Length: 240
View: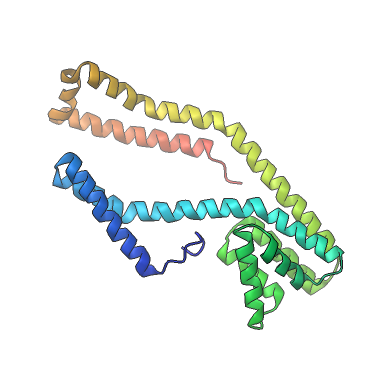
C-alpha cells in the first residue's frame, strides 16, 4: 500500500475489502437472484478486487515515477555542476520535481534529519520503489560516496541510461501492440460468437446450459480458453 502511494493502514484495507464484498454480493444477488453466484461475487469483491485496485495504483505510480526520474536526475546533475552539494540538489528535486518523485526525494531529506547519511538514505529508496532504475541511482551514489570521482559525470551517464531504457520500453510496447490486439480479438471471439448464436437461436444454445454433458463441455472449453489466454499472455508480455 505504501508503494501504491496510499496512506491506508491495514484496518483501512480490511474495511475496504469488507465493503467491497458486500457491494459485489448485493449487486450480483439483485441481478441473478442466486445465492451461490452472490457468494462467488462476494469472494471476488472481498479478496480479488481490493488487491487488484492496490496493484493497479502501484503500477500507475511506478510508471509515473519512471517518467519523472530522469528529469530529477538531470536536476541533480545541473546542481552538482553548479557547485551545490548533493544534499542540496536532492532538496531541490524534492521541491521542483513532479509526483511521485518529489515525495520519494522528500523522504530522503526527512531521513537525513534523523542523522542517517545521504548514501544510506538513498539506498532505502529501492525498498519503497522496487525498480531497477532506483537501484541504479542508489548504486551510483553509494559508489561515488565511497570511492569518490565525478558525481556529475556518473549521474549524467545514469540519466542517459534511464532515458534509453524508457525509449526501449516504449519501442517494445509499440512493437507488441499488434500482437496484444490480435490476442484480445482471439480471446473474445468465442464469447462473441456464442452470444450472437444465443440471440439468433436461443434453443440451440440452451442445451449447453440445461444438460449435464453441455455443462461439462462449457467447463472444458473455459479451461482450454484459460490455458490459451495464459499462453498468449506469456508470448506477448516482455520483462525489461
